Amino acid sequence: MTNKMLAAILAATLVCGTLDIISAFVFAGLVGAAPAQVLRYVASGPFGDGMRDAGNAAAGIGLVTHFAIMAVMVSVFVIAASRIAAIRSNPVLAGVVYGLLLYAVMYWIVVPTRWTGHYPAMTLWSVANALFSHIVCVGIPMALITTRYLGRPAPISATPSISGR
Image (cartoon, rainbow, N blue to C red; front, top):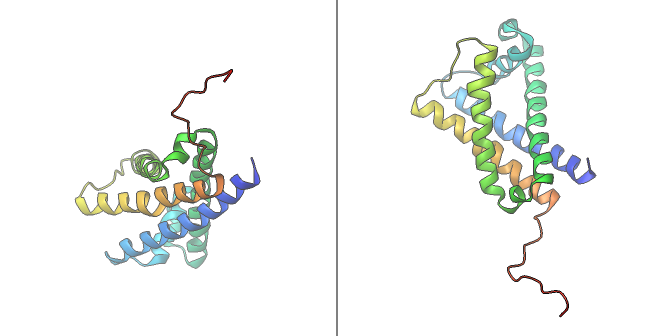
């Protein structure tokens, strides 16, 4: 892994992790949940349901957990972008696609696996805020930051080269 890749991972993790958690705080706040509740819910994923009723330390663990998960998501994207030039050729499209993929994995695999039988609500509001968070706050910024650090691939010449001339 190159220094540029590591810098992209660090920058995108910090930016996307911050945008995503702020989005979670805002949307949860609209239905009466406090930021600490959101963070304790995040902590309950890997550390058990008891974290939901724990105090500020559990909220801190939730914040660390959130950024650790984001670092994994970003690392996968940066590695893919370093190997697949098409991702860096159109970062906005790549970000939208990756955001949709992250939404599908988190809401349709991770959450139901961790909390058996818990599937996401399919109201327009809940789907729209989840897609906003995963696409606008995570996927697109991640792709733009990655492309900024790794660079766009060299354009492919439309004119074939004729050797010997």
